[in-house]
Length: 231
Image (tube, rainbow, N blue to C red; front, side, top):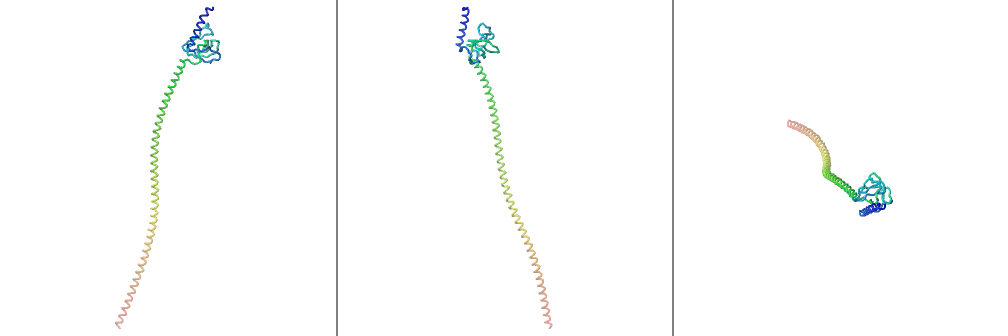
């Protein structure tokens, strides 16, 4: 019986030595983390019980994630690939194997590349929007300058209009004053005409009266002279 066990013990020792060479740790204990992984470059037999006599129910490739359910000496009961069984703890590790880490890194890299492309597209879009905004700003600035020039012109025109209105009002005042003066002069001229007419009439009547008087005097003097001559 001992002779029959020697090959198995020799195989166990060989597997333990190989596990140590591949970086295997100590046998899992109850305090070990529940999440573990199959060692790199290994294929582990998952058995129905914690001995080599139990039948193999599955093969676990390197990097397969497992959940530790129970520890019994160098054996652990695990759940993997929707199955439960027993494997030797020395073939597991508490960190993902290089292949799994590489795959995770590749997924992360692909995600980063995708994110980079997305950000590049977003940057291109934002640059396009910035260009559109620059064009809109230039157009708005040109329009503002045009409106400012138009406002200055309107202000200048308004100032001129106010000056013209003030000058017109002054001219209208002067015209009213001149019209009033003309009316006064017209009244004075009419009064002078009336006065001259009255004076003319008076002088004319005076001349007529004086002529008549002189004629009467001359006639009377002539009669007296004739009478004197007759006498």
